[in-house]
Image (cartoon, rainbow, N blue to C red; front, side, top):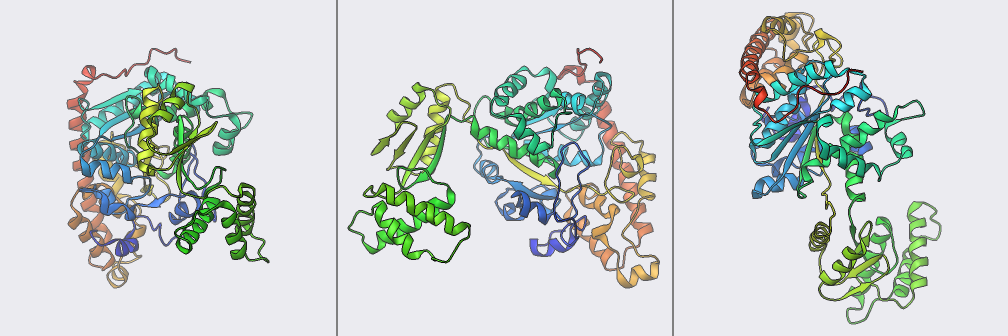
Length: 525
């Protein structure tokens, strides 16, 4: 499927582009989230389409090229670091509640690919989350943790160049989680995760531990970091990005006057400044001038949000009167120590204005200011976190139709399945074929709604885009019938499982050499 993005949207692996769905999408990290229309994630949650950043990614993974990775948050800093040979990191976690299966392989592959691209790679076992949110015993967790680690290694994770850890055994993560917990409260967690009075405290604690996991790669130094996840984990990413900002010593924004404004208000001030500067290039633009300009632009009959914003800006400008209106960079004091605030004042070169809780600089740009603020913060004991990025892959359809579920063995193929069992599951899978062979030849198959075709696109074709395209086009063109297609897929699946389990066996003998605690010392409660 090496077509351009416009063509590829017609050949999605799960019908996500054209399928209808509920008006709202609920993303529950511990529930059974499904997405019938991935476009709604762009509209409702601000996830960006991955196609837009794909040209910036050097040698993109086949999951990216085929649209399986469909969305991202702020991936451009990671792509830029790859292109320029700078440091970056990739981290994702696995809740050990059952056998690793082919759906988990998507995340394994994404971590491994980023490691191969030069990133610092982290694979974590979310054992605290499994114990608190799913009620797993420590014995069960230990068994599943071992299986997840073995599969990650067998697929290509390099433990010498990356880090594997368990939440419960990583003191740095737990300490960071404690600090991040200071920046969050129950009301916020309740709003994000629908927690209520029946939610146990350990479950809430596991959330801040996950926030610490996401920011852990930046503990030694800030760097672009990507978290590959399914879209159901997006609530974690939004909270982690918020907490990263809240821990910063300084916020950096653009401003035009001494008073504080929001983004919409700032846009009106920018418009007023640019227009008045062009009209009167030799005169100082003052806040009162901006108030007059905005009053003249305002529709007197308008009562919407834009009119309310305009009224607020006009009022502020009138109150500021003769104060010059001019662009500047503003450093906001969020959590800075007195020493750090004074150090920032000294470090800002050129014209500046110092206020009680912010500093305005007139001779630097936004990027330069961000770097200076982080440098001062790091020099005075702060974290300096960059907002973590994320990429989102599509949910795999279960072999029986519907969602792939660990609790329904026939719906998924475990990475621990005997190759013969994997073969049989594929042979028994639901397809997107027509009722008869004649109809299939005449109308073509519905590959976009076929769990077996997904196996080719997500796994069995590997890096061979030409093979994936051939399977797709033969199916929709009526040349490929379901019986032969499933036979080929079943054979490839059996080969994959046999190879994978041989590599798992090779790693099993070397597990004791790894720097990860696989047997928990915790009491079995």
